[in-house]
Image 1 (cartoon, helix red, strand yellow):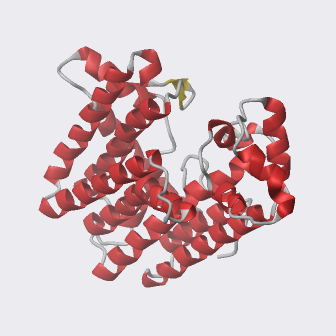
Image 2 (cartoon, one colour):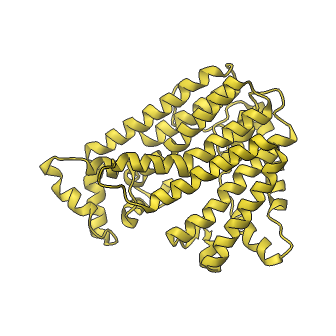
Amino acid sequence: MSTDAGVTGSPGLALPVLDDALATRLQARLDRVEEELAGHVVSRAPFVTEAASHLLAAGGKRVRPLLVLLAAECGDNPDSDEVVTAACVVELTHLASLYHDDVMDEALLRRGADSANARWDNHVAILTGDFLFSKSSELTAELGAAAVRIQAETFTALVEGQILETLKPGPDQDPLRHYLDVVAGKTGSLIATSARYGAIFGGASADVQRALTSYGEIVGSAFQLSDDILDVASESDESGKTPGTDLKEGVPTLPVLMARASTDPADARLLELLDADLTDDALLDETLTLLRAHPAMDQARAYVIDQARRAKELLTALPEGSVRDALEAFADVIAVRSA
């Protein structure tokens, strides 16, 4: 499938599904997932229910459960109850991680609403995240021992990624490799599990399961890395956040780390700014101007485009058709976002 910035597919779905019949099936199943999620966050204590429902009610793209549903279409049982349960598992896990992320980042907003830590406090946010992790674990147990093992491995990768993000790379470590490991753990691992669960519980072959797991890990990481590029490249807040947000907060990102590797004397001013306090708007604007013109931007784009290409190559294990087209289109979107 050719790369096309205008290809978005069904307007109601976060993934680019171009086949109307497939989009209708996925939307109906996603509606069921949404209904079940609302029930899974209910606690015996009304306050816990309120806190656990807070981010769920704020919306979200539901990329992970949708990927479960789409991957399940590669098998003979895409509408099984286990597929819906697996979709709920990955979204509850994702939601739980957001509560913890907001505490660590001291975030005030999430999905346009007050973060849980801002609305209540850090203790409530952390314990609510724990509650959601436990609910996802309860559901995983319904899927059997193999799913429990996969969930445990995914949770380990998530936590390791979060811990690595708080640690600076050692003197003998490559900062870029360190960052890519963070992204693979925090983002790639759960998206990989989403595709894997869908393939497993939809009844896909072992070859397809392996291909979709690897595909999910690559596109999951690449999607985050394309966000890194947009944080610098976008001229407005159309991408969903103000340009330079990561720079201002001192968050290491793909283009910044690639620029930091420069030994060109002409980059002295940029490197100085990257170590400065960029909460000053004038300094932030200067940094954005210099970084946008730096070769690191094209280097970062080339890396993401190559990752998207690698992900699409894995899909040759799938039969041709609308499901494979949708998965290829998702990789194309990632490439386009970074171009």
